[in-house]
Length: 123
Image (cartoon, rainbow, N blue to C red; front, side, top):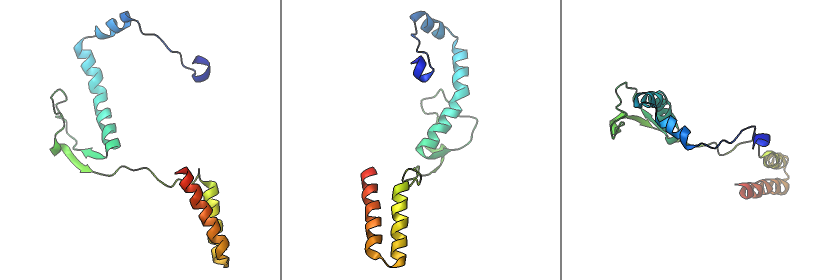
């Protein structure tokens, strides 16, 4: 693993786990609260909703975020037509358009058809 990924795997022994759990609850809560806002923000981005900006969220309660806190909901989608991986398909489509403009409809149709066949195979 070290050669390929430049990362060393380490076995965690029980004494290290005991040392980590020996931290005071206050330090653990401080560590968690520092990252809690970033975590909630990232979840909101991935799920597609926005929360109201408030300072009085009660993270230790059973329901820290209520439905009233959701400001808006938006769709999350990825771009379905990237141009760079489909250079051949883009070339076929452009060639088909050019052939159709010149008047060679059958060849234009063949180029566009080939592009669609390749898209169906990939997607």
